[in-house]
Length: 168
Image (cartoon, rainbow, N blue to C red; front, side, top):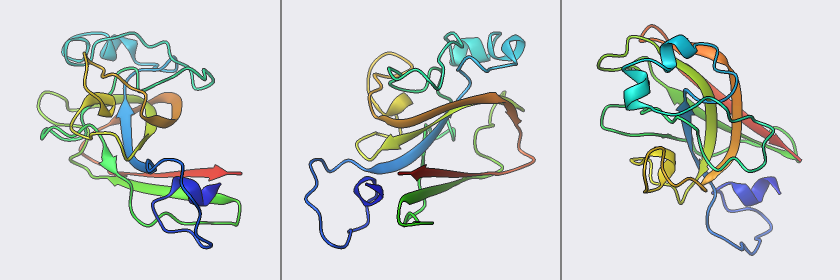
């Protein structure tokens, strides 16, 4: 199973039923564990990133980040996972991606209250919110893993390395 969700060629060779694999990581200020509503629910965040903070990481119907934020002002909404993925054990796979000091904070945002994260398929377009067209926050449906957490206030003073591991 671990080899099916990575882009590497597995050995022995398997027949894929789809070509989509884990490729991108994105952040948001949504989710029910957002503990900075006074920041995230007021301008400019409420204007640029509108929406409630209600999604949970136990809801199996989550189809995307609730309030995705741009990674860069380019704009890119996701960062590509470092390749290749690693296999800490025969029954696990780890995806790593890095967000620099200048990512997730730009323009009017000296601090961004991050509270949700997702892994997206290779079918996603990183230049679109949630990787798909449609009204903000995007059509969704391309997220493969989702988690909410207490707010991390991202500033330009530190970078973030994400290590996401699936165990089977």
